Image (tube, rainbow, N blue to C red):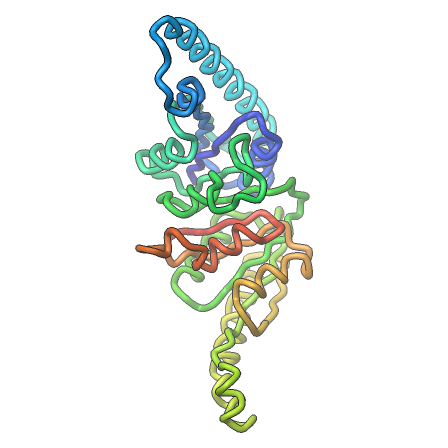
Length: 302
């Protein structure tokens, strides 16, 4: 497993490193720590500076790069300590990368070139503004990046309680398989959730008798239950502690509501991918959950 982790001096970045050590220390083979230096800081938001200030700007740029290297060195030491606690060998190869450019764009560009299995990012690094979810670095990477994305919002305690959202789709099945591949049963406990969506409008509920409404929803309930039972058995055979729960309602709302209800520290779900206008809205269930769930969220992209 190859991981790209964006780092800075924020506490969210440190939580991301700790998360990698706790969740993926048995599966990671290569870890790249990336720190981006945004040159727009020196340009004052794009305003052209007089030539007499160029030497000062160059000096500041060099200091920013030196500070960035210091951040990378410190983060590399932290993750080496975390990964050295793994009982299996070989340990991961740890690399560092200092790049220039807008943080989100730099991470996406690097990911497109190196194609990691997973990008890990703090939900609010030093450039993310609280409450400004649509413009956040983490959401930009989730929307436009090529890889699976883990958004870390808080520290994790082992065993990590994981809520895995299932709906029987190919992305959902792929996410479940990645849980088996990436997360050790020694490190996590699983709470499987399958949501039966509300397909009936208020008008249709008034038009049809209750028996007819029940018959219309029955196949969806059966499908959700079969999905839960199938994956519960699969994970039990692999040695995981696992329980399943079928819910009904709006999928994204029910998943978010389930996080505190089952004390989940991490939500895992598949991504069906976004095209066109979906990339600029909060219409995707996975993006919506990633933005509003109180826990960390792993969106697995096929």
